[in-house]
Length: 279
Picture (cartoon, rainbow, N blue to C red):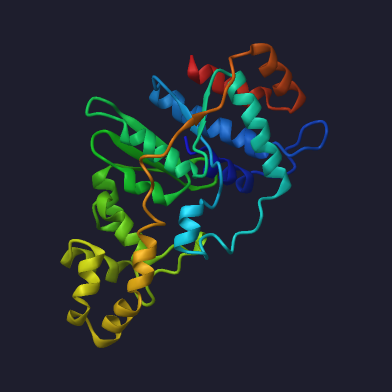
């Protein structure tokens, strides 16, 4: 579970008027638990891992591209508080909460997914398109939340090709060319999805795209040559890491703590739905 992106998705999808008795917004916690419970009830997984950002802007990515996520405002206090509640609540519910010092939840998920062998089946629930690069039939599929907290697109390799016209292992190259404004990544100027797909169909990697720039129109050729340094930097930013050191938050299942937190913060119903889904 991409706990970081899904909690943000729930925070902005559900009204801030959902509060506890002390006036703290609990919309993100309620929405997150309900989203995850729905997927768990469908899949009945053997194991669930909740993955968190340790930092929203890892130093390595920032060093490669200082504008990475630079336009993002500081997280609202209301969601920071709710992340704190999840960090107390989930371990008490007996759930695994994992982060990687200095890295994002994406990198935690990438590292966990990379450990999956041919006989394993991994479903990633996320609100971040970057994780589409992890799709690997038949082992890893990605469920991407499209809007709000209920509509989800399921991506296997065929689904990625149907949506983007590429294989998952080319998604990084596609995203670098196209850009991602939500992360402050402008992409290559003048290269939209269709042009990106055409370039990737003709070349095995981005270095080859730049090396063969003269095969394009003069305008696009000049743009590709001018973007060579940007493309090199993005190869340090866009790929999800699959080798980070993971840290599991300590904690033991404690029904009394769960009952206390759920009652104090008006999340009894979603906690109950989640608990029932896990049984």
